[in-house]
Image (tube, rainbow, N blue to C red; front, side, top):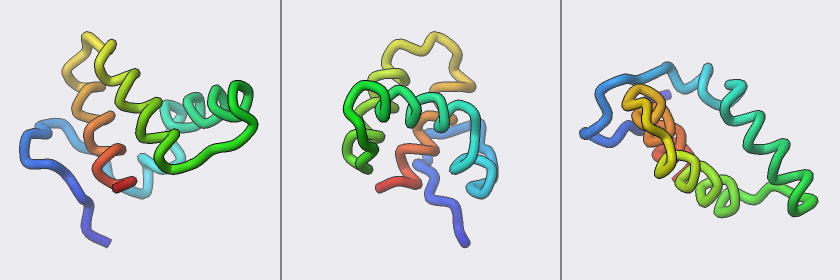
Length: 71
């Protein structure tokens, strides 16, 4: 499987590690507790919000990569 990575991402992680990452799982757990379910648009929205607040450029790139793989 080819990773879907926007060309402005510098730091990347292989796709198979992204989908089961603690970062994604924490956001999924938050969505379940807040909304009772996880939808792809809801996950993308939550990731986008987290990314906007993130000061670490490496994590911002990882958020971008995750969002790109969900679209």
